Image (cartoon, rainbow, N blue to C red; front, side, top):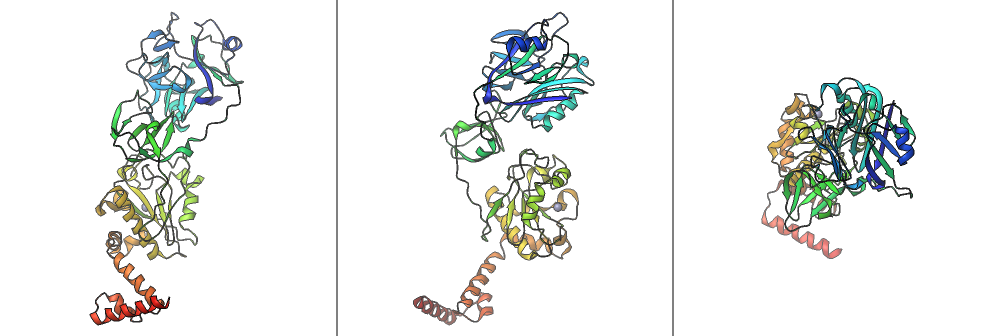
Length: 483
Ligand SMILES: [Zn+2]
């Protein structure tokens, strides 16, 4: 059995480590303290003294943090941060970290007495919420880590395990007889606190305000190391917001120094507007991560069915099939539209070169539709216009535009590859070689349909005599005067 509580930090009135020195049961603690959520806390030695890191209301009870392992520190609930700085907070608890800085630890630090399968408890942070976790099922620390990662924890720490594992989450209980050394207790605000708006609403594009620039940190707080800086005026995309910190492609920045920028409608040079229809966060085919977007990988959908256009793929990507298959990419292009499924700054699963492969983590995945009721030539031209837009936005050159085949050997984009000179022609299209000619031909067609000129092929040819140009100017002037 599992009990899991996710409590928004903003709704917590008090978050405390209650020390009872192995003298009280959970029921007694609940009776005496009236906390809404109680979970067994950290570990202690056979002689009853606490071990690892433990600091309660400013009093240091155990200063033996295990090496330099991250624990949780806080003064007030909203401060709750994963940190090694036990001196910097009034309350601090450190046991075995499971997820640090958004990354599940490959090697979880614990000693043999803690290993193997046993009931487990843990605390973590998901978005702006405290996660309390208690499982009477016997699992390994690694399985516990994976379960918490699946729940979206950006940080997590294993608490005491085995016979200590017990909780009462607002009436949802896992019972044990053991009187443990200390307890994690949470009281929530009693007035009906309005739910904080979903952080999704605040994500988007921002501009850096301070003239001195803005520090980038490796995690959401000043306790995390510096990972660089953004210059004043830099426009950044904020992917996640947590405790007033925004995650960008290069790391975390304080939201206090950012101002929102009106979302700009992106349009390609052929006039196709990019529609956004993102895969929801938390879906397993939206791994997040970062992406420097320094290239593009070109695919074909391989779906020749009627109606298999960009909109159809957008809804498929948001569904269970794509999630189960762990498939995602950034854009689908058909003969009349371009739909974006993920921010350019996120990793996607399209290149077939592994979760950490350069195709998946550094390039933008573009799928071109091959539905039989579509115009594939048009779709390719639209994809080429998207490639030009991305090259301009991200500053990568044409030789960074590659086939899916480049990364995994898959025969994709299949139709283009099967066409003699198909790939070279597509790259020429991306290069805009044909663009000027297309624009000229469109202009000639427009003038022809207005009756201003009749020798369509001559004017599309591009080489003109002076007298013909004069004649054209006169007919255009006559047309304008009549209008
Ligand atoms: Zn492909």
